[in-house]
Length: 465
Image 1 (cartoon, one colour):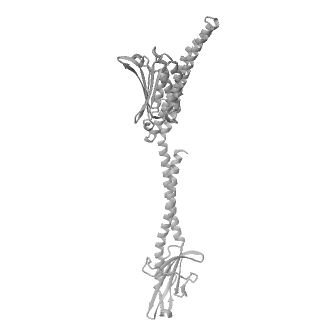
Image 2 (image 1 turned 90 degrees about the horizontal axis):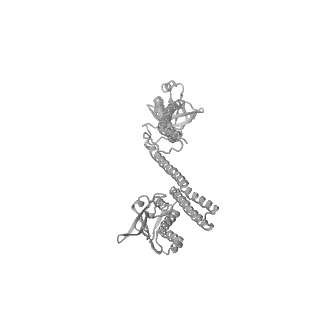
Image 3 (image 1 turned 180 degrees about the vertical axis):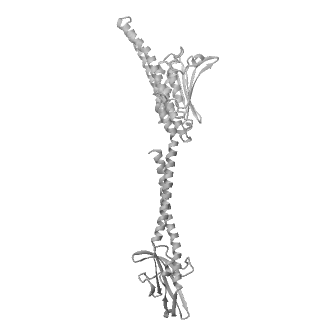
């Protein structure tokens, strides 16, 4: 549903219901006001007739006489669309004068009426027409007697209904004009309000492929700013993903080219018989192993970026995962006869399980690789109220100041850290994705470097966000 149609329905539907209710109420009020006005005319007609009555005898023996010419009622007829008829009766319902076809009144006078006289108003039928009737109990007194007359004056409803319909139609025309104005205003306002959206849509469509620069809309309405900000955030994420993909393809093509070229050279050398078959196979195995490690680390670096965009991370028991990784690398510890120690405290962090395993695996591989044979390696996981800190301490030569400045950059391994140079880059990407930090510090003993401490700090579950 378009915004214009939504606003029209949202505004016109309640207004339409209100107009219907208001119109019905107005029609009833108008009809009631017309009835009150014309009921006064009926009452005046009844009083005029009552003033022209005479009586002989008293009470039950009284005999009423009425000499009422019909011309006496002409003054009360509004126009030729209404007709007045009357009936004068005694209390027993005997017709004294007027139209006997008008049904005799059998009701009762209200205890607290709108008029001081003994009068009541009601609806009835006369000659198949609906009429409004005023009935007046008129005391009649003369020198010859005293009695009570029932004076009924009825008027057809054509004029009343015509006036009520006229008021209703006039009201409906005004209400229709009001709705038309509302529709016009909504269309114009929506058209003007959505102009920045259409302009932004046109600008986005006109952009060249791959253009993910932020959307600039300084004149956009305030209500659109959250949408524009969210769009820019999405485009920023897309640009980061695109740049990461380009960087991965560039690094992969550059870094894998060298081991493949070396492998080809080694195979050609073995085919020519330049080296012994056993030596050639050992060299090829070493090259394949390094290429495999490089490929796995590059895929791991790409997977970190992929998991960064996902929101399905769960609470993980970091000590349990850490100990599982230690079991995996225990053969490497045994090969170098390393004196290993692990101390953990309870710590629950919000992360993907793969990220925590990969983080620990890379830190331990680096520490084992650069620890001397028979050296010491310790792993400590401690936590406070907000963060958990994992420290891997090896007994290696540490890092120089020049290497520390670029150690987290991919493929920046120096002489001290032989390898692809991706391990610490992976660790940094994982810690940043989890909202943590990583630091590398040389550990000194009596003025000399005794090893390297790699410390990773991650927020605990209750402190995330």
